[in-house]
Image (cartoon, rainbow, N blue to C red; front, side):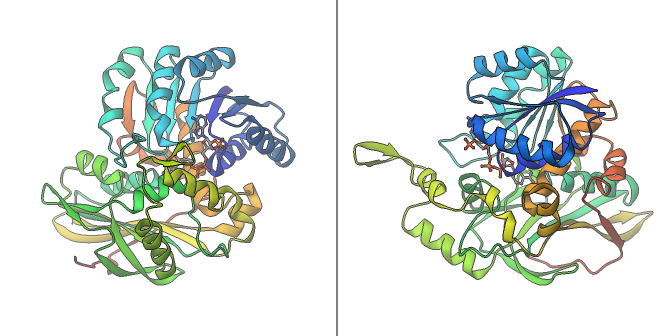
Length: 403
Ligand code: NDP
């Protein structure tokens, strides 16, 4: 029986609130706090109706303001903060957790607003302070990062003596019926996918022009889809935590239509994060673009099709070369029926809730800052299916696609 504070009332916040409320014996009291309190109230009304959990509360907070966060945490006194607002707020929320002695969990690594750059260095720098305080920070417990790291840890523990090649493959074969929309926060999403590509090979990072490398990847239950090599944050922690890895890459599907929209957005300057003066005001084009694009949290209703995300691994077991594929497919419609959120929010919110459960029941514990792959994957994967994300594995499959 624990109190939990969820910060961020977007698509992912909706799923986390809903999933926590389905487990009242663990999450006995839930507070959902965000910049706009009415969004928390709306989610809470839906979740109370669908789950019957009667101890849900809404609050307003600016998660970039440490004193406000500290005051909120002290007034509610949770055991854990689940941060599913934006990556810009990782450090302020970690600061507030340190000040109040409360555990922390997030789904995306810190990104400074003024520079589209995401890496773990800022959050790993909290290691000693979290250790000294005797509290735990769990970083990147969504799907990717998150389940992809746990899949890799499971492969390392149960299937390989050494992992040599890791390809994370991420397909969204869903259709939301809009000409252009992003599946999570548009500002964060566009910053991520317009960056240069980057992958790890033989101890070095190799940079490519954005979307310069693509391959057809065959996704289970979906079929072949053009997949583009992009940089993704879990590559940084996985290559550090599994030093036998010789090459690690991340692939994501984009349709031609999507890439054309993205090119136009970039060419006309709307993806820029440099402020421009407009009618006497300083505005950031990408922030303005977010305001006119569909809200990812509203995409669920007409979303059809599935996501498929997994890890394709090659390495050595008992002196023999072995290939292995582990994945989950998630239906947008099923996710919406259960939580009124689309599949991308669902695949992020379910692992965050499950990670929180394991932290609260003590199956995942420790003092300091952890990436998910550093923890025991077994209790997580035992429950992931019953929490709504069934997973599958296959050995000795044809998984090779060379750069
Ligand atoms: P949304 O944009 O839908 O929601 C973000 C929420 O955070 C909004 O409710 C917003 O408030 C709130 N917020 C923003 N700034 C502040 C602030 N300063 N103080 C308080 N609240 C604030 O995003 P998503 O739900 O789609 O994504 C949430 C997180 O999940 C992101 O960090 C994203 O990167 C991560 N993610 C991780 C994935 C994974 O697999 N690991 C996949 C997808 C997403 P308001 O409503 O007022 O704007």
